Length: 262
Image (cartoon, rainbow, N blue to C red; front, top):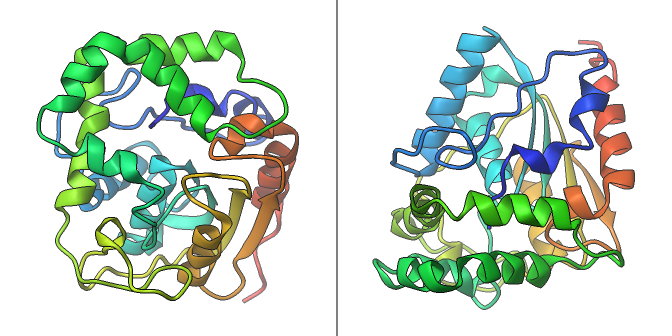
């Protein structure tokens, strides 16, 4: 389930000590405009426009889950705008339909809206707890924030729009992270460009029941040589909120590294 910028609450004040930080809600979620389409090329182009308007040049990009996939699409489409890239539990080319069954369910034309209208707040709890593996429970204050976010039918429609766009994307059958033929949900667009950030870090909750560590390793391969993988052994899909004591210092240290000598 896509989250809002609130998920970065532990990281933002640390990064803001010595840099300007932008933390936009995903398109259609939180306080952002709720108007499609929600396909990766469109979202990457809109993110590029935001970067050019607010900064005017290359930036460091940190993204998780849906936001991480958009960040990689940005690094693929506009490598001139992405210096360092941090990706947390976000797929790029590979996923296993047996684990991401909710993508198939949410991509249906109408039933998800009806189900959410009846069980929306309970469904939010279920989806977060389904992916949560840390020994401590989710913070109730922020659970309530996410429940409220999806009380708005327009925001719900935007969230479902991400899944529907993913399933409509034209593509070719590729191979899964484990080397087997990929199922339908793992297809990628033909001629999809490779992300080309100057430097990349992949952080993964190793107990993610939706996107297992094999997907994280596939992301490392896609991002290319020099990409590092930090696996958090006790965390699940929501690694940023499950393990801020690991994620925050790791991201801050990575972004503070000096640029390589050319």
